[in-house]
Length: 160
Image (cartoon, rainbow, N blue to C red):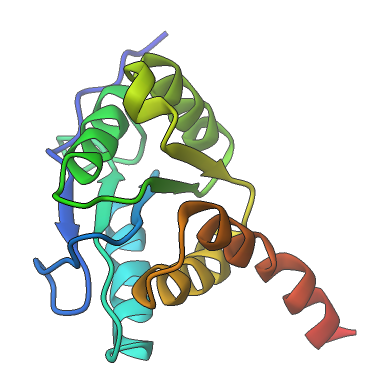
């Protein structure tokens, strides 16, 4: 079995890239592709430029390849959770092993951080859009998670 190379350090951004809102719920994007995670972040922040919430990216491998790394996810969650006034962290993952990396990361967190972190079942892009808007207007972690989770049924209703 090939061992993944550690991914680059997670980065944060929200609203204007690099900015974040103190006191907001943070969102960590776990993706096999760094480019995909950055594009999803840019879409969310571009569509909702009037709000801001911190977004951490834990995506891709250090060598630029595709993959995820639970240690990088842990670092991203901890970085957002440590921001002043942080109200929790919602993790949104793209595919199977990204979900497994996110689950492994949540198991490695200390009790305080773990109690303020959730893994969302939401679809990657649509869930991010809902979560970012909710976090950006100051909703709490449970409300942000609920907004992200509404994304799949809302899309299905729109298609039917």
